[in-house]
Amino acid sequence: MKIYHIKTQEDFDALMAKFKKEGVTWIKGILPRYWDKIYPYITLKDKVMGFATLGLVHEIYRDVPIIKYKANDTVNNPSHYNTGGIETLDYIKAKVNDYPSYAVGNIIKYITRYEHKNGLEDLKKAQFYLNDLIELMEGDK
Image (cartoon, rainbow, N blue to C red; front, side, top):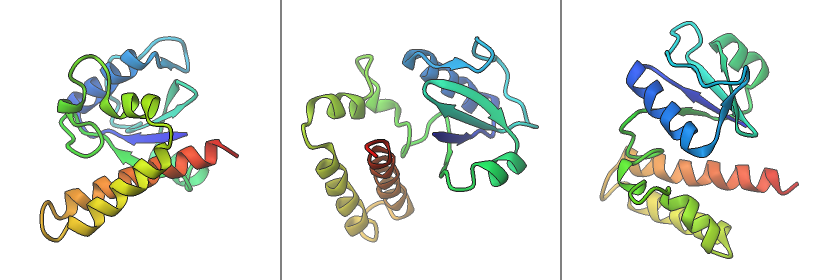
């Protein structure tokens, strides 16, 4: 389960394009075209997405980390990692036999360099890999 928080139509359009490439469908059968300020949270489970309000997120999905999705997000959706038609991380997951070790290595890298290189952005990258690793481990249960 993932929850995305969207703040603009541009962010919404970028996320819908990403979902379309990944074969995600809307709970009612088709991907919506417009961002809804009333339902700024998008839920994703088993390649099916839906909308949620802040109240619903806090009430039902309180243990699920929220991904603040931005069209040009250098942490969760860097455009330079999608060159060639495949997300680089998806390719790595398909080719690296021990992805958890790769994720841990990146967590350590970003945490140890954040004070010297990109600050908060590096901490968010470490958090991205930690959340991805947690999601992978929970899926193995």
